[in-house]
Length: 126
Image (cartoon, rainbow, N blue to C red; front, top):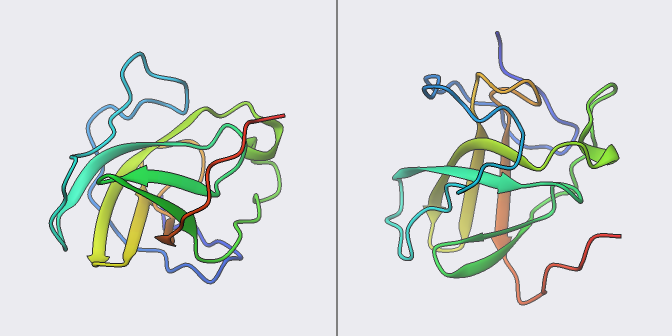
């Protein structure tokens, strides 16, 4: 599988596949990363996307996507059928975060989305 392209301006990257990704369902214990993270280190992470790919909590901070993510045609993100996307989080600087979807995922495999710090609280799902 090649890299996925998003309409967000995010840059697709090649990453080695992670063993046995949780295929987009709510795992009993999602991978949430460390309380403190080092810049440049990729940490296994299951990103909560049930209500859309907008917010993340990583390394003790709240984050919001740099640019809105538009669901690719035919993908189930907007319909709420995806709970978690399996992937990895990596601080690219003290105030930029990159999430890369595992290449074995059935949704957005290999796509990368950039997050910036936010003081906003994640709203409740409707």
